Length: 246
Image 1 (tube, helix red, strand yellow):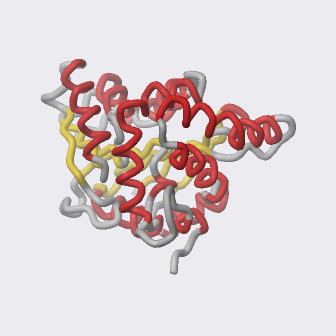
Image 2: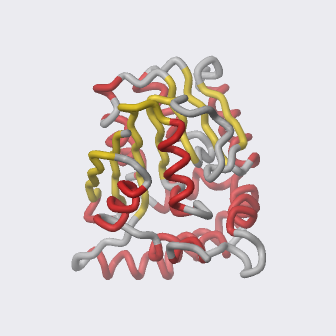
């Protein structure tokens, strides 16, 4: 039995494990995923990523991991700004990472950025391997949130940092009402038009709605062993940025 409601929300059916379905879904939508993301967030996602990356600037991380890296957008932006020695993008979807590999080549960053197929709930890396870990818009897809956070804590060096960006539901008027309409009508419609996988884009708003946010998520991160956990709501609560230290 899972601990959190979003762990029970799956893209396609009740029978298969969430991780299996999420992998399949992202393989399906990989070719159109980037365009769709920028359209759906109206480009604001770039400024959110910038804010997240800037939090790490003062610490000059050299060994980074970007979990649920997808097509590598965040990894590339982080690498350009922070200039780490290495950045490993991990994901369960080869389809998404293949798109990422092409983008990394185009940006001439193959020396720094590599990709690895990993299940975030049982990473193959040794303890204390990275000095910074980032997760942008992927943590709500974890099959087991507690396990995923504990694993990230394990592979971070003491004093290392975890930065999480995740979509959230605005709680104040009028953003709450506008967002509700947008997520129920606009996201699935555009998703279907551009990606031919409607389930993926009905799953998206449902998984955001069910995901713990704000103080509750802060507590969950603490429980996984992190100290100094803070969060900040961005763009009237459409996105939340979490920052934690091991």
